Image (cartoon, rainbow, N blue to C red; front, side, top):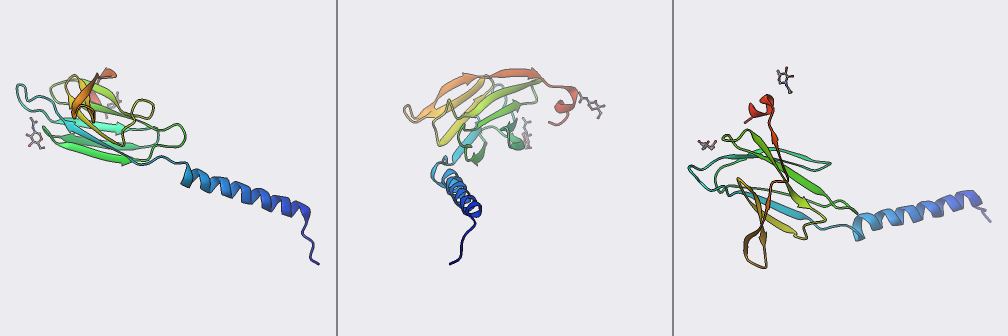
Length: 154
Ligand SMILES: *[C@@H]1O[C@H](CO)[C@@H](O)[C@H](O)[C@H]1NC(C)=O
Ligand SMILES: *[C@@H]1O[C@H](CO)[C@@H](O)[C@H](O)[C@H]1NC(C)=O
């Protein structure tokens, strides 16, 4: 009869238990994908403007993207388990020396899987299924003066 070292046996059982929990974590308890679409909805008043946006989370930097009037930008991600994910974006346009910040996806605030926003000069309006329109408007979270160097990126 082959006798298994009891320490090796305990260790193997522990390893199996850990592996079982790990796979449970990544398969059974995870969040579905979220898709965020951002439209440059600034009124063409007096003329259409191009908006440059820059979205980030703690883990991802999605870079700079410039949207012409009514153009959209889309990204998708999987909220991290268990606390979710926060994505925030800055918006700039030539006519303003300010960086305009908005939380574009907050796990705590948003329960959308498909999250659509129209951005205007005062903030963002989120699409609501209940009203069938971009009726959930919020002002910028914060506004900061750009330094000379980031202005030159535009
Ligand atoms: C917006 O960007 C487009 C493409 O780069 C450019 O042709 C257009 O002149 C820009 N419009 C304004 C108002 O800056
Ligand atoms: C801006 O850029 C210049 C030259 O590249 C550099 O010397 C300066 O430190 C920068 N300023 C800031 C605030 O990053």
